[in-house]
Length: 77
Image 1 (cartoon, rainbow, N blue to C red):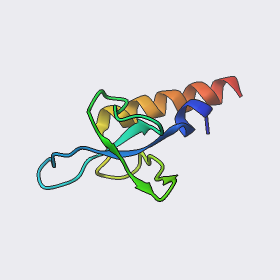
Image 2: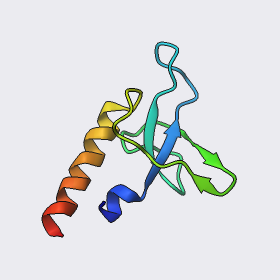
Image 3: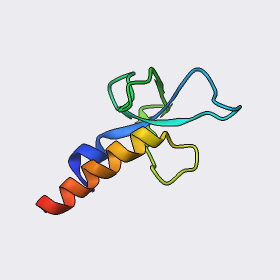
Image 4: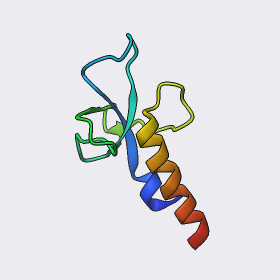
């Protein structure tokens, strides 16, 4: 996994979309998702839940950004 893609954890918006919490990619020290949404990081004590682009509730734009970063890392590895 790329360093860039691995650096992103899971965050959720305060507002639900169609009664579902949408998972976003958020920097582990931030509150702005890769797509620009304001989110709250999902933390369990000091562990940040990682972003998983395969979930059906993952933000489409965050998933696309994550996949691009992952592909760039594979090309340079």
